[in-house]
Image (cartoon, rainbow, N blue to C red; front, side, top):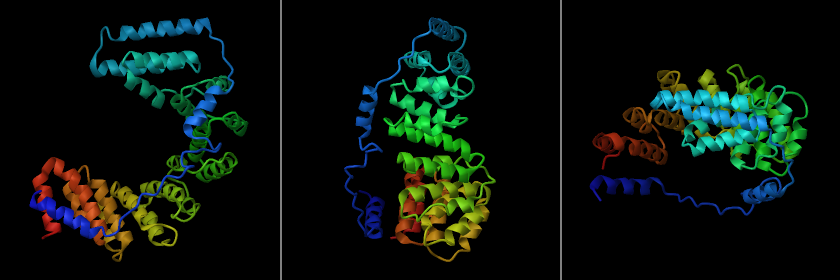
Length: 371
């Protein structure tokens, strides 16, 4: 062990006097609304009766034609040009096939033909409109027959996002055997609502989530769809104390969005509500502020009295620059006042910096923590 490494270990030992004990896993940690584990829920789903939709010979012929056309793409193209053309074709194919067993066959075909990235792109970007329009009800009925759990979740999120009209809670009832699917459906539904009315989305998530015993684990994904004109103060006060993990996660999402439009207000909210908001929430505010104006963020944080809100703000700036400019990130890390937090932040930056310039990282470390 060299001199620096030895010192590094000793410094960590001195700076981290408390030992964190990993809590034992709760017997119910992996259980959903039904009280079954994820695996048990999946088995229950597989055993549940399903309507088998008859195959349409014309759609089978369509699938055969599309796969034949796919094979022809690689005859004259290669590289990035081929990938671009494959995505365009896959999008066209999904549009022509629509929701149904042939769509699953096409997705299987893409995987078998070594087009995993195109398949993933289709599931992420290419299924818009699959559960909307005149065929929406039929598409939702087909979704109840899909056995692949990962695909079910993807499609359920999309179905929720594209829901229009009444009957949403009734459709959720049909997924009582698949608790994780209900959460995806509700998240998608509320994410779309949040784009125009975030508070209505919050209330819908809470009301329907309470009925179905769905917790707030995905509410942050709903919040991230909020428009810049949202009432972020009202949203931030919607949740309880940060001592509750899900409340803290959701408020962090609000502060992230808030910092995109008015980081000063977001920061003021953090330092003005210390009884309910943890100081480490300043990290996302500072990181968001840095994307707008590093100088303004630094000036505002430097004007704060020494303490954890200021320290976590500096830590947020360090995290923002860690990958792109580790030297600058290290300067923010060493501006943290709390010794334990300073060591932790500096260590995280050092581990990134040493990959590209070990000598510079070591020199900066010894300047910050001289023997």
